[in-house]
Length: 132
Image 1 (cartoon, rainbow, N blue to C red):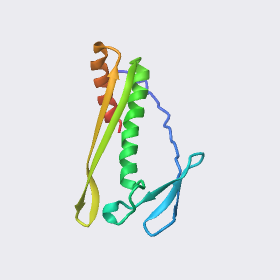
Image 2: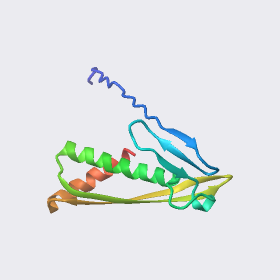
Image 3: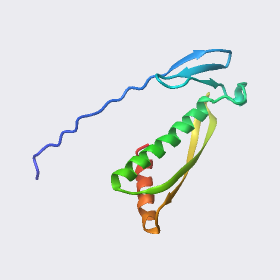
Image 4: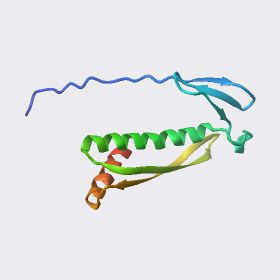
């Protein structure tokens, strides 16, 4: 039995955003050194068309997280891929007295250089999904 203890120093990252209400059901969100953008209640709840909603931003965040995690894992393992595209779909349902995401489906499409890379890409995608 090995009595050596491995110590891993934890990392902590802080992210900040600001939001200002600009109407009854919309506002402006921003983060340092990034352009601000409008957010609104979904149209289904009386919001304005053509403005990002918190629900769409959450789906985009999950989708982007998978892409960046896969990209990191691919670089780390030496997998060269030619293209990465993905769509995301989420379902919100009324549960009790709250609307909750009941399902989020991500559909990444990854193009690799050769057939021998397909299995590696699939494995790395599974590893990346677990990290979410």
